Image (tube, rainbow, N blue to C red):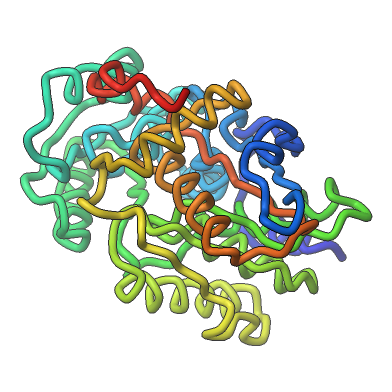
Length: 347
């Protein structure tokens, strides 16, 4: 039995994403970002093309959350996230696709932003899809944000609704990470005879990171997975990823597949913090756009690509290796950053 069949037999699932997403070689970037000893083979896994609500990695995760919600006869999805949250946007899209109501909570994670941050990009699309909005004043209180969601769910139950909460904090089983265990199988099948040496991705909630890493190990692949920190330091992110990988193995009745050495994190492009730009991120966004016509966002994929550039400059990879960048989407968030218009980019 394949890993995907085992997961889908055990856990409720609904189809939301356009898969398989393309795996493409980045011919121009492979030349632009040459290794001192020769060319690196850079690839991109286009999970920005999953289709749901403008696309992104959350579609794979929501297939399992929404599947469980439907199995419980829920009629309303609830979730929480930053003002420019891709997860919130795609949860609303999933709810609408499935004929459900949706209530979302916007957290104050990024201070001192211009008007566009609150009215353009993801907030604009959430408004377009008609979600009911709530606010939460803290940006670094995951448990508190989840408790607030369950309070809203309680009020909805009293009103005769049947809500399902898609939680944020690591106190809950990482059901959505199952979607990236399936993605690991998809990636290896697409690669065929090409040996994937490393995968680079944005590491935020840890759901995508832990799912892909656990999935690769479950399938016998020893490809390295580098998580580029976009919300918290590597020191704080490491136990989060470890615990989620452990829980995934327990959920599937597997032995512990991920050890400490497997959890590779890089936080050099994190400063000055979540959702904030720095010179390396500017460079990554504009270099990638000009070289490949691939568009990145400031919060997740821009930082992840900046992290990839940093790893290349540090000679972490050997010439000739196959390096896959997981493009997790998030382009709508770029419209909340008008300062990008003031940057001319590398020549």
